Image (cartoon, rainbow, N blue to C red; front, side, top):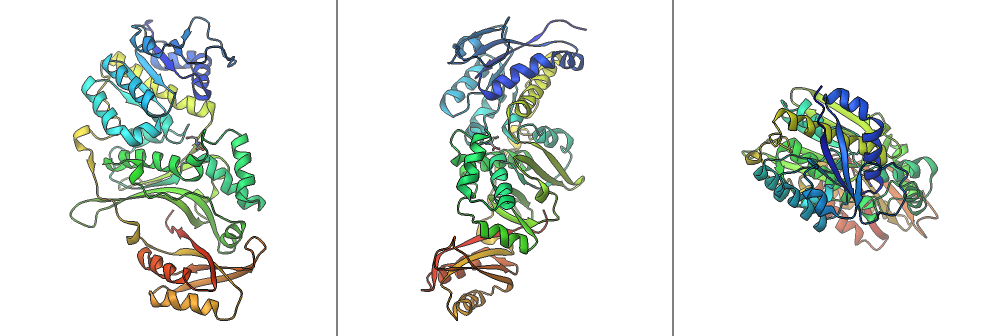
Length: 442
Ligand code: HSE
């Protein structure tokens, strides 16, 4: 066995960074047996050098100097785990300039400035790997880049945010309201530093952007992805979903539309109703799952912990092992990080949400007066929208009003939206109607 180690420098000793230190130490022997040589953490940089993280850093240089870490000749691979945009971007680009490979978990940066970062890596002929940025411990990016590489991907859809899946699962099981459950998710440490990134769907949109790039070679930023979070969902929505045989999940959905001359991409994040029988419906708590359909493989489902210290550290360490192997083989810098070679990545037209055709759940809030339902049904009928099922509930949570909970037949979203504009102007309708899309084939 060759003895010389590949050296790793870690910038950012927070939760995930501490997990990386643990995985590399605790699993050093199995990693070495698989690589044939050691992977050694040689240097760590963090602004806070005082806090005790409960890990043994003896023999590892630890200071606050990230630039010196990048420049250190003993460091072959830089791990960026500080998150955020500007400083992280500068550190990554500097690493490339110094011909260092980079492992990062920074979904925010890559889903906004990915084009610049990936081009810079290609120019410098170094690797960038980011498995930990999407669904923590699930090796979904590697699976798409390698295991599914021979497929035309038809769709990728999943539960890619643990915090919101926890909140939705708890609201469903306990009947509690949103704020109470979110506070618990924060206490458990699933949520982002700013939990609005979770609850407003931004974190999921960032992950979906990277998945869509992997799946379709789409150059996309997360800001282009229509995104709707889970705020405003009420216990009554969960009761109705249950009665209709459905379950509410925050899904990221990306599909290829190959019906025209140019392939178009559908990408969206929003609360979604899916059948209780669907495999995604059984994903509970903070777990994640991603379903990928390919034209050769058919349907696949990947499940696992989407967040947390050790699962995410497992993904970071896997990237380190892969790059270390390539360094030794002399192949580093040749793996296309987004599965497509850079010149094959291109901007795609996004399918507007208004073109979506499917069933919807609608929660109307109205005064309990004869004729209200007739007015609602009339407006839907004028727009060609058929009603499949209706439940009415008078509830204290909707003051002085009743909730009319309805499933429509499949309809074009643009038509549903114009019907709702008309309905929400009715004098008896006292709050904006909530629409939740129903997906049949997930
Ligand atoms: N806040 C994220 C989640 C962490 O809840 O899934 C992992 O990206």
